[in-house]
Length: 221
Image (cartoon, rainbow, N blue to C red; front, side):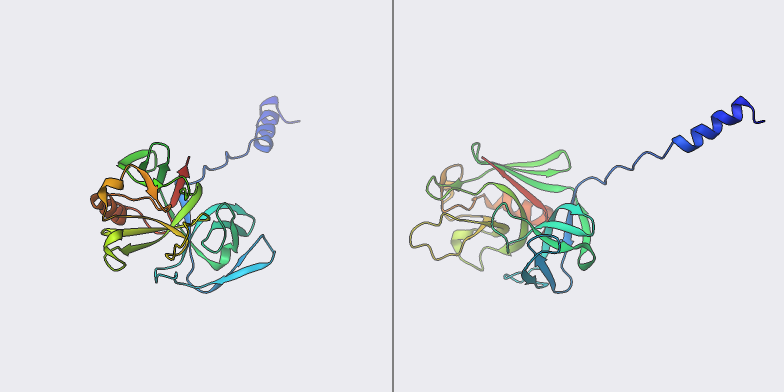
């Protein structure tokens, strides 16, 4: 007959399991290295077929919000604000970043973070009341030269997945939201734009260096 000590050891062996490992810190980025369908839901309707490049020529990336089995819920310009798309996990390549941007519209402050560490605080201009900057979770899609598109963009453009659903009358510049410079620096810190946050060139150059495409951008009222 086994001793009391051996019985206790057997019970412990069958009832103790390893603690689940913690998820790695940061945010996942899905890289589209080959054309892949974007779905409305797992196994749902195909919304579009994503190419490997954005409309501005950058590598196509998607901010990953969550996993569901073999599927990933992602932020994409092909979806309206606050709507996620879905891709098969095997169809994309995943990387991770700890960098994020947080924009507080009421304070007109943009914060660059690396994990929980604040790297830089920036005062920005935001959308006027008739064309407010949209709120929600978005992602950086492109980093572009502002000079290529016009002096009113300043040095740099950090394009976001966000759309402007309240375009000013007669507006012809498209509905995409971007953080960019301005040739009217007095507007920084005010609510006077068509929806895009306006920042100073030195701040934008930091964003261009530090923020990868695919990084999350949280815009709050």
